[in-house]
Amino acid sequence: MNDKKKLYKDIEELTMELKLAGVKNNFEECSKDACINNVSYEEFLYKLLGKEYILRNENNKQNRIRIAKFPYKKYIEDLVIEDLPVDAKKKLKTLSSLEFIRTGQNVILAGNPGTGKTHISIGLGIKACLAGYKVLFITVSSLITQLKESRSNRVLRALENKFDKYDLIIADELGYISYDKEGSELLFSHLSLRSGRKSTIVTTNLSFERWDEIFKDPIMTAAMIDRLTHKAYIVNMNGNSYRLKETKEWLAKQ
Image 1 (tube, one colour):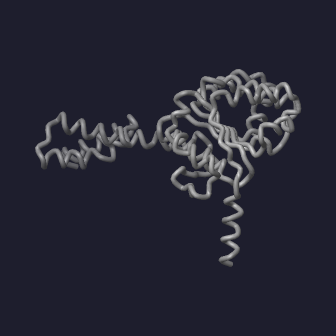
Image 2 (cartoon, rainbow, N blue to C red; image 1 turned 90 degrees about the horizontal axis):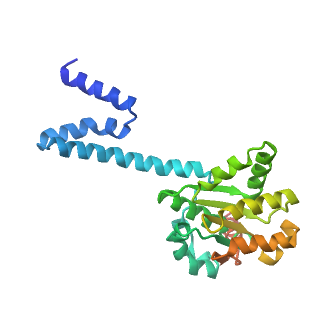
Image 3 (cartoon, helix red, strand yellow; image 1 turned 90 degrees about the vertical axis):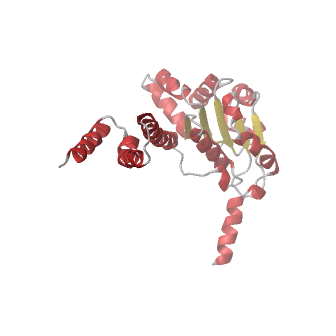
């Protein structure tokens, strides 16, 4: 093995040890380019570090999406705007700016099933991940289960501290099942801790006047609505079901 090949091999081993995948993947190409174009050491180093930065930045984006635990990937750009309810059409551009996350405001997507509530919430969540925000997607029933288990194991505070680190929490499917008193109280307490500081997106198929069907306690229900809706974006998602439309189109092709 000649000296240059040995040097390249040693550099590759060092980059692997230091976990510099961008440098490892681009060193040889950048080195040859520097020799051919008489690039200075400083320019060569800058270009090589730039490759490392781009790779790490992309990996960080994908890691944030993975950690968010979206049930599937849906992007804002995939939405068929003309199929959305009128209020969603009006507010989608504002929400897509992600300004609500910076200001710690909530978003409530309320309306009948199949109108795009979860798609919009996931689309905003993925966009937030790509913008550098830390996001978590979780159904309300799963959230309550985690809160109950944490309380019984005496680690509730640790879970609350963990959730507090998320810039955006998407609480999906509020209203599909009712909750007992303990679950309702834990959910209220958890969401109240974020109120006015960190953003939460809530999707629900029930109008506010029917939330007491979920929580049973009218006083706590009123307090929950008050906390969640304070300075929040409330989007009326009542409209025609796009899933029903897709089903009819599929059946017509059979």
